[in-house]
Length: 148
Image 1 (tube, rainbow, N blue to C red):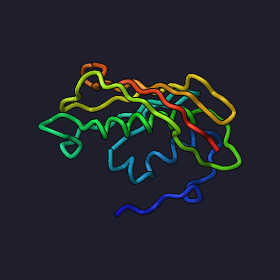
Image 2: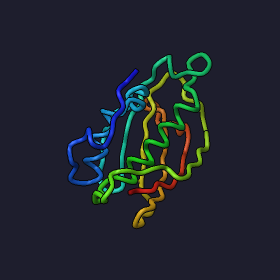
Image 3: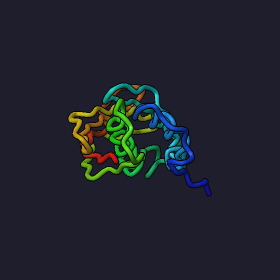
Image 4: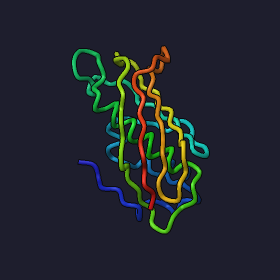
């Protein structure tokens, strides 16, 4: 069992991008998925989930639950990216919708997330999830994330 990570376990981040950069490699669930943060800037984040047979549902098809989890993490990353740190370093996805377009077969998943609206506490984000080798759209997600 992986240890629990709390915000007190993290160094004090300068901004939301740094908070995400610190959280991603320390989160047990994110580690279980094998996610890596590859880029983060104001309102934008990119991650990769490497293909592993443990993430499949049938044959070499990656499970929709793993893809949805990546969408959720992308929403979180884009919402925090570049934002100032609030009084309380916490947040939650309040809504999310995922549309599956094509199956992901034995390929890494590329996650590209963007913040569409940056409110005081609520951020509206979109995530495109594509096959890493062919760039084929696997799913598109939209979501709202609450910060603080």
